[in-house]
Amino acid sequence: MMMNRHVLPLACFVTLAGLLGTQLGKAPPPLPSALLNHPAPSFTAPQLDRTKAVFTPQTMQGQVWLLNVWASWCASCREEHPLLLDIQQRHGIAIVGLSYEDEAQQGASWLDAQGNPYTSTPQDPDGRIGMELGVYGVPETFVVDKQGRIRMRHAGPLTPEAWQQTILPLIKELAHG
Figure 1 (spheres, helix red, strand yellow):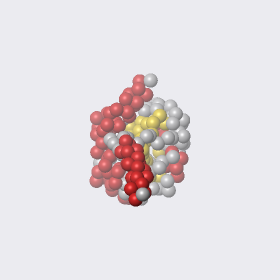
Figure 2 (tube, rainbow, N blue to C red):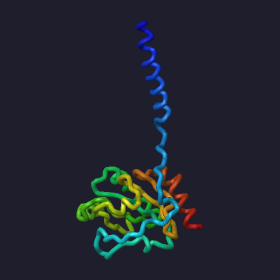
Figure 3 (cartoon, rainbow, N blue to C red):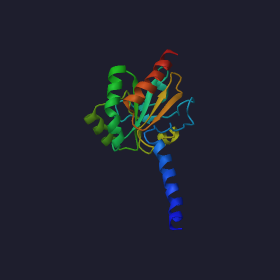
């Protein structure tokens, strides 16, 4: 009788551990985006560096570009930043860095210290633009096509693998299409 009392909990534990074990090492599924294949939200935002009055996505019409949502307080943003610098240097792809829920001075100082891969750095101090994009957290990166439609969303820090296997091939396809 004592033995039977332990069999059911043990069987449940083994089953649960097996299910969890099959998921280890798998990449999380991409986060859905209601904006996929739809125009990027229209917005006007001041530039972080204040050298240009404002940024609007319409200024990027006719080119494929990345919208990278970042913040100086974000540890994962620091993790992906060297890759963004490399992407800009090697590929010359326009990267717009949306400074999300950050103080302008802190964001500007962070870019001065880390290097600036961004073509433009619009500010989103209250998170309104991020909300329109459906941002869950930073960093997030969107691929935007020549017509201004969001074609891909990458949640979390960019990795060399994601860049080489998914994002760069899509950018090349969109640039030639």
